[in-house]
Image (cartoon, rainbow, N blue to C red; front, side, top):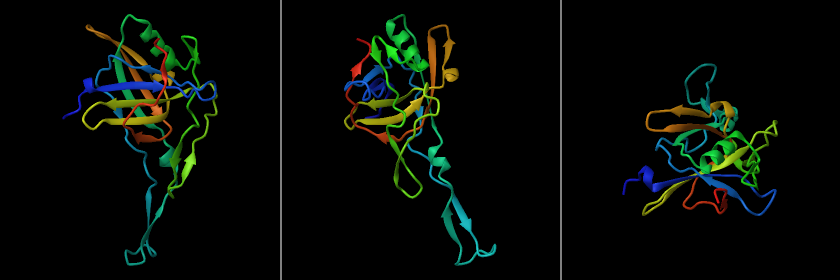
Length: 196
């Protein structure tokens, strides 16, 4: 079976753990089948060490700085907007508000870990700007063997969310930066949709 966009579902989750035992999420319906994501983090650069500039049996590689591991990964997608409260909720969610439909949203920043160049698991850190909200984004394609990805700690910079008007639809172009881990998944995380 070949996966198609109609087999998939996209959800954006907040943390919820600091406020209640319930994690809220929003389903992004009417997506345009243009999701683009990186499936794993970069690794440190391999630095070549030569014996006084000579290529011989004494040459070796050493690991460079861990900076590439922490560079945010890009995430992009778009959705057609409709005349419903769901469009309002999605626009609010991406703007970084903390309350939608009387539900308090909590940032997922500093709730996951990444692997250092040496392979050790290291907890991520909070943003210096406490007003920035990060979320977990999950996508799952349903099939005989499901395919899905969990992108942790995704920040949506307000200036990179754009609306594009067309003859047939008005689209919201969403651009995020993934600061946490990207892992395969087979089922969605539990939670409660804010769209009720």
